[in-house]
Length: 374
Ligand code: PLP
Image (cartoon, rainbow, N blue to C red; front, side, top):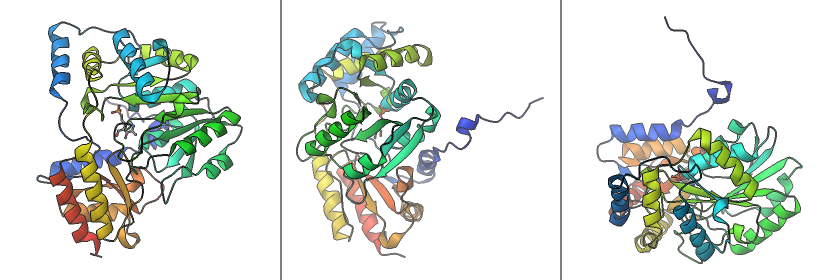
């Protein structure tokens, strides 16, 4: 005899089905041209795979400290100093099983009921979807149409309840890169109002013009998050790291102890090896980025952002709904993501050019073909 149990109220309206639907759609199409998911080009490099295999062979398969193995935290501290100008103690770094989980842990560690979290619109979906899970209040600040930070709107949305501002540069889904001057101004605003910043720098190595600037280098009340999924093509290994103010990292570690116990010991050894060499080369991404820009512009689209990461977020023709345009693309065997997963706007789609240049080219040809179809 089964009783009907309902899910918690917290999750009753929780909807992450956009991604599930895409995965289902992938199964139904024969060899789809997939420009939907955010996978980097190619598999995990061999030297990283070897390190993972070695870890298993050497029986490095036991629990690790909740905050990760010291050697990995040391390597991350050196990387942060060298690449990001962030000088941080290894105890102020914690290893997490991917940034997505890391974000949830940060939210749970810093937010009290009623606290406000400012998230840019559009943005990576967990930023906004996970806010209510922490009983906090979401404030979305538009970055449309150029996808840059609107510092005035950010100022205007600050209240005495604002606890966090979440930023992501280079950006998913827009490819925008925030200039240093804006990040400096944002840091000044945050400082004035004593607000914490979360800076997700997952795509820092995918930058095609200018260079990456970490706001954590000038504003200590920053929680800098980064990981291995994109820079080293390790999406399925599930590993990332969070660094920031000591008290917050301590709280995350307390939570990690019972929420995950530790991240995979094997993935940690592989990540340690990953950091011994530079991130994946960008040349092919730079070519694809230009190809996407040129083709979309030729087809009549206004291309904004597109300066970093490997995404382009563009407005559908004639105000078509994102889901209708994505469905039309799917009828032509092309997968794109409807913009509503990222935004309150429903007339954008996201294109990922993480795949091979041939795949991207085929996808762009289809977009050109369907652009003028009603
Ligand atoms: N942050 C951003 C901005 C992303 O786009 C993604 C994945 O697409 C992630 C984090 C996910 O990171 P992880 O694989 O470490 O969970």
